[in-house]
Structures are given as structure tokens and as C-alpha cells.
Image 1 (cartoon, rainbow over the protein chains, first blue to last red):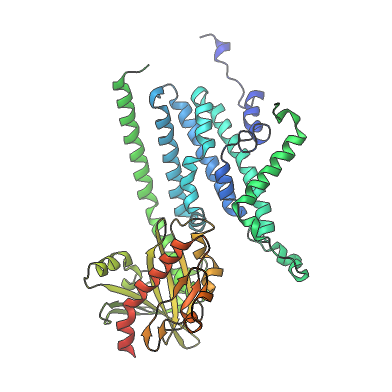
Image 2 (image 1 turned 90 degrees about the vertical axis):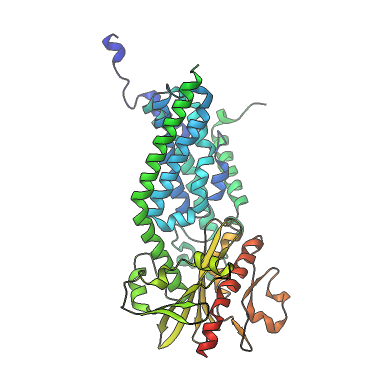
Length: 219
Length: 245
């Protein structure tokens, strides 16, 4: 092998940067790829669980992508989905165990959702679409990028739902401090319910597409 | 395309490696998890007696406020009683008693033991009874604190493993739990558990409303589970209470 061939591509080459940044906006898993909607509805009633869910997904997706990418030449294609599932499920169990050991209160709130990371379609989607055909480093960036893209939507949705639904931000009683209750303001209980998450995600998609026409599909 | 042998070998090795990693992680983290569970239990016990506790100060508050931890058998006799300071918080028999096993023994008609915690505020005793039952998807649990007449409820806490968020899971909210304060467990000297009533306590006769709370809309099975848990756990204390009076 000649020397120039072995020369590595820089860690943050334009191509790699794209992997990290595109999922934040143009190629966002929730608003563009429409993956992971179900968990976006479930954990966004408050910012805190949304934030922890984001961290968990970053950890799981980052590692799962790297592991599958390292194993990609050895994985028998006929059982690749099973292998991917085993990798994801083990990582999720690890995350769950760590949460239970070190942030018990949060793990109590997330209870069911941590297990649901396994079924989060973003993770399987990225493993199948990217990690199986790419080197570990780009796969890692792709995983982190997609998890962040998922996470920021989650947190924005949670911000509006918590602020308007419970009158708090990160459990801090903002509305009470502002004293708006004295003027007859009431929290909107509807914001707490899952349908509002869908509507907020819808609004984000709308804003995103009206700003970037290239995302609008032609019929 | 790989041979079948390769696929089998790959799958077997993968399973063994994953099993080893997961079981060692579970073993390493277990002490931390057990500690968290104990703290959570203390928090539940304290909160039901209206002593606000956080994860940080729960152990200290438990040490300061719980004056006695008692184990009672199903005939109402005291099996073991530890006064404040006799044991470290979380180490007494009453605290570590496995309610699930005891209730299982009850179901089989065998003798069983039950725990009772005593707290004291303003010179008045509060009795705290741990609860365990079944919800829709998994276990539900909690604590109920009563005044020294063993009838008037001071407070409750509930927890659950996997009830539906927004529906059954609402049993762990303050709004649901606040309804229990001031309800009565005895009626004319006879035990009358608190029921969680679908459609609201407005559907009950006026004089029975003191023994009921509103159920959660959309969480009927969990609500029934809470009702059953209260009845099933509290009735065990009746022999003890009768002896005491």
C-alpha cells in the first residue's frame, strides 16, 4: 500500500463535519427522517426527563454505531438485525443500570422509557443505514449527530410543554415568580398531554420547511 | 455468504460475551442500586408522615424522626420492636422485611409478619404502614400514615414500576395522594378500607365518602389495584389494633 493511500482523512474533514451537523437541521431524525416520534411524545412533558433521555440516546447511539461499525465485516448479513438488536439492548440495559445506580430519581421518572430506547427507530435506522457500511469514526459522528438532532427537538418541545403546561422551567416555578397567577392566568393542562407534543413537533417542521424550501417534497 | 457454522459460532460467542458484560455490570452496580432503593423507601415513609425528605437528607431525617420500628405477626402480637437509635437506619427487620414474601404466605394461609413504623411529631404518634399490591403492568407500592387512633389518615405515598404515564402513573402525583388526607379507616369500630372510586366519590352515599377517593380517569385498573392494595395490606393490622385498644 503506498504512503499517500494510507494517509488519513482529517478527523473533522468537511465530510465528517457534515455527518455531525446535518442531522441537527437538514437531515434531522425527527423533523425530516420522521424517526423516533413516539418517544418524542412520551418524554417531553418536562425538560428534565427529556434531557436525560437525550443523554441516554447520545450514549447508546454513539456506542452502538461504533460497535456495529467495528464488527461490520464479521457480522453475518443473515443475522445482522439480530446482532444490531443485541448490541442496542445490551447498551440500553447498561444505561438503565447506571441510571438506577447514580441518578435514581431520574431513572424512576424515565422508568418505562429507558427500555423503550431499544425500540427507538432512530437507533436501528442509523445502524442499518450508516454504521454497517462505514468506518467507526464517521459512524460515531453520525450517531452523535443524529442523537443531538433528536435531542434538541426533544428539549425544545419539552420547554414549551413544561413552561405552558406546568408553569416551570427545569422544575423552577417561573410563572409563579412572574406573578402571572395573580392576574388569573392558569396553566394549560392540555400541554401536558401527548397530543400537544405532536402539535409542537408539527410547528417545528412547519417553521423549518418554510425557511428551507429544499426540504419540501414536490408532489 | 458465510457458512451456517460461522453464523452459529458468531451468535454463540456474541451471546456469551454480552452475558458476561451485563452480569458483571449488574453485580458491580448492585450496592449503589440497593442503597438508592433503601433511600427511596425511607423517603416514601417520611413523606407519608408529612416529613418532606430529599434523597440527600432522607437517611438523617429517618434517623431523627422514626421513633420505633415494629414487626407484627398476623395474630397481632409484636415479634420485634426496635426503638430509635437501637439500629442503624435501614437495617432493622421491620425495614428490610420482604412484604411480597409475607403477602404470599398470607395468600397460602400461612402465618406471616408485617412491618409498622412509628414517627412522632409534636408529641403525637403517627403510625406508618408500608403497602404492596399490583397495578396494570407491574407492582404498585406505597405507605400510609395514620394518627394514633389508627383511623385518620395523615398522608400517603404511592409508587409504581411501570404504570402508563399520564394515566395509571398519576398515582404517584401529589394531587392524587392529597385526597387521602383526613379519610378514615374505621367505621363504628369496624375496619373499612379506603376505596378508589371510579366516577368519583360523588357516586357514593354521603356518609361513606369519608372512606373513598376519586379514581384516575383512564387509569381504572391501576386505581382498582390501589384499592385492593389498601384493603389487602391494612386488614392485616386489625388484630393488632384491636388488641391495642
